[in-house]
Amino acid sequence: GAVVSQHPSWVICKSGTSVKIECRSLDFQATTMFWYRQFPKQSLMLMATSNEGSKATYEQGVEKDKFLINHASLTLSTLTVTSAHPEDSSFYICSARDRRKPNTEAFFGQGTRLTVV
Amino acid sequence: ILNVEQSPQSLHVQEGDSTNFTCSFPSSNFYALHWYRWETAKSPEALFVMTLNGDEKKKGRISATLNTKEGYSYLYIKGSQPEDSATYLCASHTGGFKTIFGAGTRLFVKA
Image (tube, rainbow over all chains, first blue to last red; front, side, top):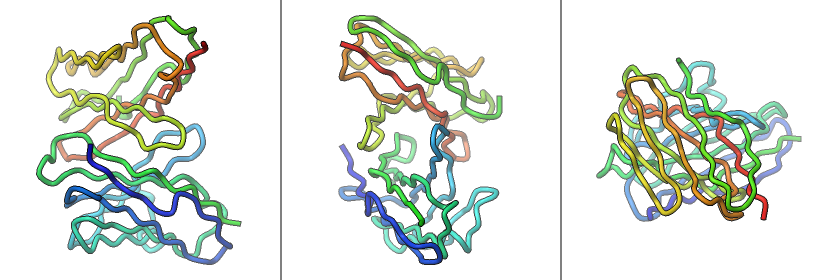
């Protein structure tokens, strides 16, 4: 099946620093990628939809200046958590759909566990 | 229903038991319902994509049904095995191509 690679799988950073998470589709092109966040015992919450070559669409309540998304190619989207604070500690996971099959299931990355100390 | 809701939140069964759990979703603007299986330390893996009312899909011992009019789907596992232990997520795919996830049902199968 299609593979989405997400890096890093875990990261610990100091408060005030920025962290970049990469989401890469390895064997298909993805016009759209999705970024989710999950707090313990809660649902995957959609943060933003990343569109290749254009601005990301952010969900209500998600600060676009805090969570910078760049989707520069059909196989790569990045999420940068800027000036991270302990409350940003969470599990972040991306997904992508094959642009040739927009109505099918999404393929997920492995997720990134971010801890801000 | 505005959100996707799954029940129960967790489930403990013995090996060999059959089990099922529920996903409720908004019936308006419905496009597709996805079931994923998420094992610890791995990526969520797609099980089924269901689009039509009355759809029934099967993969080995796992099957799912869909009722789009009343907004629910059931996932069934026949003869549970320890390797079935995972979190089962459902997600509603709306006409705007937005995917809303439920919180998942965490299944524990004891040998």
